[in-house]
Length: 506
Image (cartoon, rainbow, N blue to C red; front, side):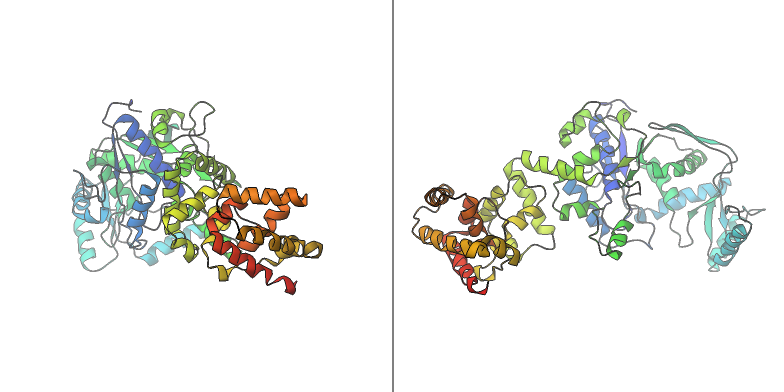
């Protein structure tokens, strides 16, 4: 690896615009970004949008939003510009065609004119003969003139790269030397019948022209690299640093896939978070997500686990990226998030909370419409939270109209109705005292409850729990003094009165 401070490191992340950014892709971005920042180099964002069948129109903006949420900004690319654009592959077709012509002229690529039916017949034959399908190179190869003529006639013509008859060794900065024996990769398509280049070809051309020096990607791409090295040699390009990072698996050993969502929905289960946006909508902090994924395949060499982005830049080295596949422990991520929520400056925590409210789909309207001051007070009352939905669950009732309060039958039975309605009786007693309370503050309310407990020789819960059920409808809320202050005196008394009206129904 190039030493930090050299300033000539150029890395890239090149997503396909097919949806939100996968969490594994976010780990790839992070490691590339850290290497660029550590070395004083550049991080390039390139959009690989040549597969038009999978293109999703708003995906680019989704990916950009995901990266910004994580705090991983790019030096060159969409919206940032740069000297080696365009940064959308769909805008670079003349460039690819120029290099495609060179490969055709040199004999390192050729037109292939098999129809889909002929290719399917090859597959069927291989299946019948119980062998792995391998494309049979035509002999003799079609000429350039034959290929262009066939294409003009409307035939489904592609261009294939002619693999050299030699072993290809790739030096990997994580895995060491990886050799692919001659004949293990068939001649592969580098230009599709629609005229667009395949990923393999466009990637090689762009990495050269965009002056990329290091390619960091997942181990699932390892078998693609010999193809790329073969094309680099044929085109006279340099071969740069490659590093293939550990794959991220679920705890059960299965690969983290977007299909996990579909499987869960078919079973009637809540879908797991897979994309970066899933974690954002689920109420995680970007600081926690970045910190967590940094440790998937990399370790700092000591026992530390808590890292900000700045601390990661100082500590990160590719030499400490391992070969072993990583497992995505959701319980550990939750613990990370809990710790980050406790350690962040309150203003930053509130900013993140507001972002969550803006993207989550199940936020009550009253919470969405609440003023900033009340939202701040609500968040302060919920410090110690794990994820932001905890806040909404704990204080959402505060933002609803008093008349909308609904009572959990189990809570009513357990807290209010048992012991001949002792909870209801306590509400009557305490509401009268609250009505005359002039200083509606947390300390005054808590002192009032303490006085009632001493007077009646009862525990705090015998007063606080009936109040909690009366004002929230359940047994969940912040500390009772903070809860009543959040509600205000009028709403508190109105809800107690409403609760007392259900006594006769129990």
